[in-house]
Amino acid sequence: MSKIAQRGRELFEAGYSCSESTWLALNEDLPEEMLNFGLHLAGGFSGGLASGKLCGAISGIVLSLGRKYGRNMGEERSELLREKVKMLVNYAEEVYNSSNCDEMRPAEDYRPFCANLVELLLEYAETLMN
Image (cartoon, rainbow, N blue to C red; front, side):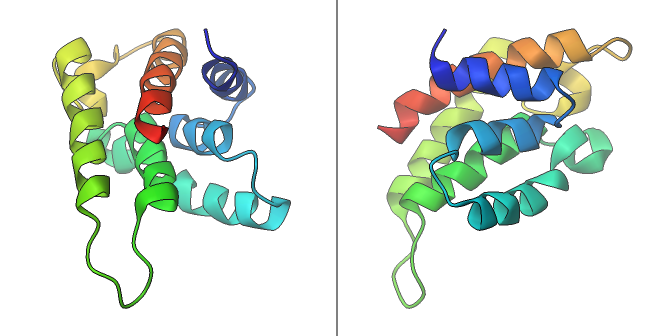
């Protein structure tokens, strides 16, 4: 297990949400103010946008991919970012047969499942970040 995947799992097990854990694990190099700003943004994505839709772990990773590959104001849209996001969602769908929170996780006692999911998706995210 990579250090980032392990860190994401630790954060999730410490009480951070799936989206917060993935954001924090992938961005610990940021100054605290920026890390906290991202944490604020990531919080709303947990639980599949609080509605069981797109997995929050995926959303936190997408925020991180955007940090690295997104465009600046006045620039063209980043095709590389779009491709990496597509690869991430496709990977989750291959492994879990879905990218929707409600379809992926068990209805009860989901935290152990989600801890594993955070770890696995962060392992894959590292390949996308290089």
